[in-house]
Length: 155
Image 1: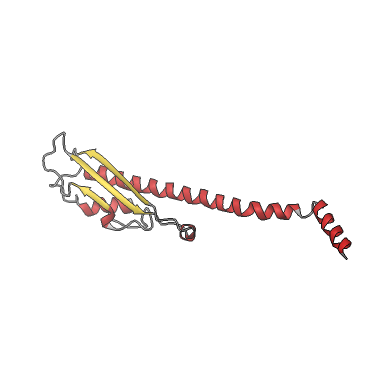
Image 2: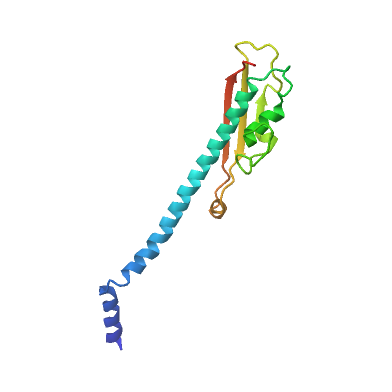
């Protein structure tokens, strides 16, 4: 009996038919985690780009506002940042970025007579809406923030 088991084990070690399965069991989880990480990192960069675009658009709008212009409001600037249009219609640029507290605009009222030293600063903050992979790996939430400053020129 001992001889037949030993012969079977030696035959298994000498055979190459099981090596493909063993290599696959080692490589597939590593490649899967790597691919998910690449996709997740790309999504972080995409959301950061959308945040930057919204903040810059709001700063550009607010730097050209004058108090005597009727349609100029901080709500419009926030709609431009969050939705990409002054009406605030359609889907937001980023699904979980619609809270007014996540966008600060300074000064809060446009300057009536701008000087060359007047600046408009808009800052945005976003808690990254991660995939379930982050929760499974116990990775702390990522906070994406961006600030943009423009010279106040009015219209």
